[in-house]
Image (cartoon, rainbow, N blue to C red):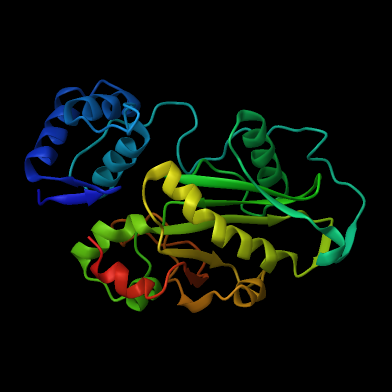
Length: 292
């Protein structure tokens, strides 16, 4: 296999051969155990000495999707892309309608999801009130709750980007090797929910603007990668996408109806959606075409 870059680390052909040998030889291990083993062998560690097991597992799953190796099947639990158990709590229950101008609800607070209670609340809100429901995300992810003071208004999730998406890839103008190396610098906004009883004018675009600014440092701190571009998919049979335009996103076109993680470019059946992107930095497309 040719050398690759993932999460800022260069993997030589010899490294990739070693990874393949480990996966083949120790196929009875779980994916988590394989990731820990590879980290130890390659000394892939954080600055504090801990193993980069999360990133390594994402890399192994990338190699699996590209058919460069074959990982063991996911074990029963919470597999990526599958619906998960939805908790019910008092905080997730509907309340009286919240209506008015954005200025009536200051301060607007964007709260990173960091602990188990926050994660349970996020799962509940998405599972109960988002039309797509809650599924364990593929790869990396960063979640937020947002509130007006202590009043809960909604939540959102950013996660690994679509493997291929023609409007985005054409807009960037990257070739296949560059796409493989730099895709990690694109982040997908995979969920965005304003609770159904919240009717605050311009709330969606205001939350998007705050998240766009906040995401860079949170993603960098968590994964060691600066995201250059944010993407999202909008079902225009349900939503106009006006809030994205108001927050300075760019509509690029429509998908062809393939799944988001379609690495083989063959899967059909998903409804076409509008592709929107937000360049987080100047000349984002140019940097994605050239950044190692």
